[in-house]
Image (cartoon, rainbow, N blue to C red; front, side):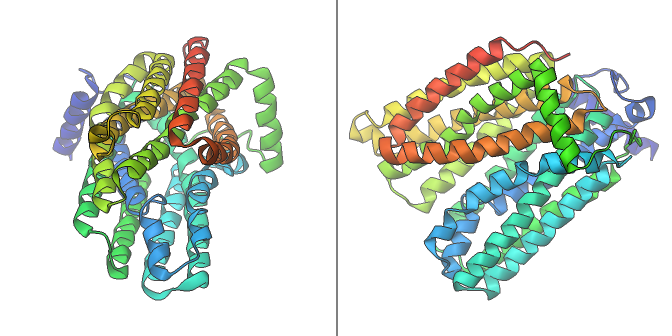
Length: 437
């Protein structure tokens, strides 16, 4: 056991660059002692979660599922909004509930378990459902998956704040992103090998592996050593909403941060339209889509550890630089379509810009996550995360609908120019944020 602990400490010190694995800032001494072990469990949990996310992707795998079972096309359009917004919108309602739990890791475990069950349900639907009824059941399972994802998301950040010391969290999320990128790379390779028409049995197998990934996520969460915390201040949903709105009025930094985060949605919104532009120009073969998945995984593996270490020094600076990168990538993506056909009608230029935007998007995610965790205290972290995510979920629905209308009206290239301007606004917003203490 001692040798195992020693090995974990050495790996932890190599990953973080620490010479002393027991250096801590704002967590209890008992949590500090367990930090190397908890760090590795967080990494393994991230691997299971990301692999599951990729193999149940609402942008790729679930549309295939809808096509195979013969669901109406309009149902396919509901997949991404349900997947993304469903994970964010309800979080303010569960923040008070989580606050009543001395150990928040069990909420994380519950969320992972529900996601695993939802993935198993989707695997069963791939084998035994069809038509409108089958499509409706897929959407219901996706609602469950998305809501459970939101439950895990808020609990994960709260547990991280209690078990990983400040100035180590960005590094952890960076390495988590790198491990997740490897999982994405593997998933992309599988998609390329599958060809254009994967059968229902293959889809069921992919979704079964996704369920296994969330099972690994839940098991790792259960093994994390979390010191029981205070439970005072737990609120019901309405009280949480009122408290959250009062925080927006009283905490100007928190309000400013959420404005900057809203403007930084341009990186997330730009990715699918850049991929769509590449598809429109070069063709819709699955191999092209698989290539985008592969370059996405490679970009994540390279970018996340670098962004993570930078976020530990200045998460505000990461948000600023990522906003600049988003603006540049959106401009480049819009400009490719104007190049000669010998360039613009191949997927590679779009794949390269897509990879760059993925790198930048990881900077956005790591910068705002680290800033949010660091600016909040142990007592209000769950509420801050929940309120910020709920606001982002509302904005994602509203802005996503508006962006869709603009894309229909202006086209993908012009929309990328609009998103580039939004990213520049995010840069100026980040410049005026104070450093997170």
